Image (cartoon, rainbow, N blue to C red; front, side, top):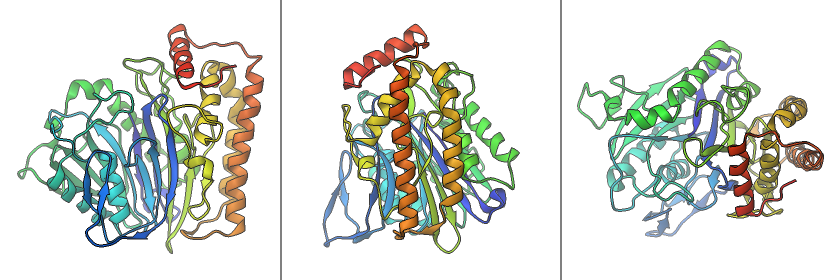
Length: 423
């Protein structure tokens, strides 16, 4: 399960556009944050995506990506031209093709590396769909998990929703805002589609699976939050939106929490493994914020500088490593999740205070800027978050576990499987 939003200047009231996404994946699936440089390639070179090769472009744009470690594609990202994209799983009556093709995360990364604006990125995805289709396992451990995809594709000029089923699509252009959450949202009100005029794209939905995904509730909750703050929305408001819980405790909301916590191997098996917020400013400037780990309710959004990425954010695989920012945080997260009622109030203040301080000090900047002020603020934020979580790990040794029995068993098994230290 995932949640993505795009908000235009008329709703932010700040002359900027904001993109935000929670990437909900399997509980122990490492998600890396990478800064990928632009590059030129020789003619007739091939590119290996997750399951198949496609012709390589002559040149690609620089990108910041948040991606599961095992696949080529990405869950979300932004490129140097100011195109930001997030994808969502869609459950439809159209089943994946038997022959492996491109998965949604591949389509997203290909569009970012080749699209100079939102329209160009959307047309790239549509063209790739028509040529190659979408098929292939999308799960890390669960290789039977596959799905169709929807996308929010935005730039400084506007927002596009693109929803797909097989090789078909429906596209809608928006000015103010867009929200998507694992369900088809475009019915007959599309601006372009591969289907006949007047066709209701929503009829392709698998309504049973979509219902259990909780998508309509989360989408409506995010929509209400955006409209309530209309005209005064900044990065910290989107941080709050992405850490929203339907219930007081995680795993009680039946997939209705925007900030998702896994609690078992059946209905509630996904969690938010990475979050990204991007401000697109005039004059080709940016501000990028990442959590670098699971559950934004338990960690802060930190400033990220494309020209000076922290190496630890791009390290990590299937087992715990203290060299990986994601895994260091995951150890804290799993132990905190076992004591959530006690730990969450203890960490909330420093998370919010840190974000307020960093957003106030971190200026909008050019993509390739590595000014000392920018780098210092980013490194300071990442180090402080890391240090605070290590200190909380020590404190948790004296805090009794409060998680329900099934949740506790699930996380204990997960920790042991991945060699995560428990306290």
